[in-house]
Amino acid sequence: MEEEQKVKLYGMWASTYVKRVEVALRAKGIAYEYIEEDLNNKSQALLQYDPVHNKVPVLVHNGKPITESPIILEYIDETWKQAPRLLPDDPYQRAKVRFWASFIQQQLFEGVSQVITRGGEAQEKAIGELLEKMNIFEEEMKKLLPNGVSVIEVQNLGLLDILVGAVFSPYKAQEEVAGVQILDPEKNPLILSWVSAWNQLTTVQELLRPHDKIVGLLQFVRKTALGSSG
Image (cartoon, rainbow, N blue to C red; front, side, top):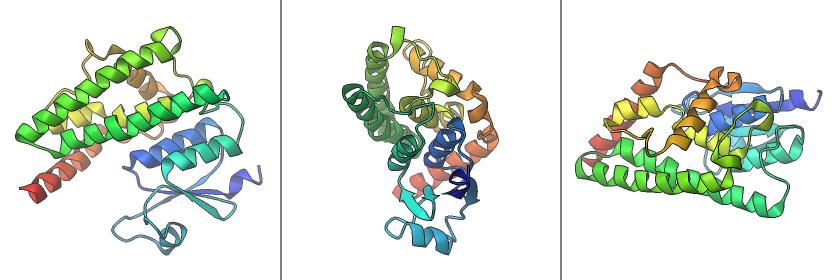
């Protein structure tokens, strides 16, 4: 317990990267102090702990900082070995999870970001590319998951659950702002059921922000991106 009390997390309310770490900490029952950062006026502590990127999240454990959410998540899993284990023990299965974790981040998360920040033909191209990648992910997850179904519970929460949930949890707000459908119940029933189950977790619900607040933030992001590109 003494060790757990020495955990601090520097974050920002709207960051999906921060939410990933918070869910992992809470799922494992790790007590931590949360410090909200104003990214327009970053604290000296944040600048000191992450002098390279000056970004959140930063996890500080016993005075030692760990940066970048993928690295933080693995650090949490390796340091606190109680359930849930975020990554499998088997090296091959572990490698597969890492591959799809990278796919979620580099293809799906970035794809959603492009759909939100682009307009006109550029947005049409972005949504087409995103849906193609989501269909690939959908089919491959049917092979990877037991019986092709995702059953999420706090006690068996895995890295892919956290990443899929973090990316698509606010899909209704994403669709409202972008003006396009991102999650199609007919084409991506597995991903949709995965996200719906994620949003029902008590651990997740405690961290969810109001729909209107997420919409407002995404509208600002979209307006800023379209203004700078126009």
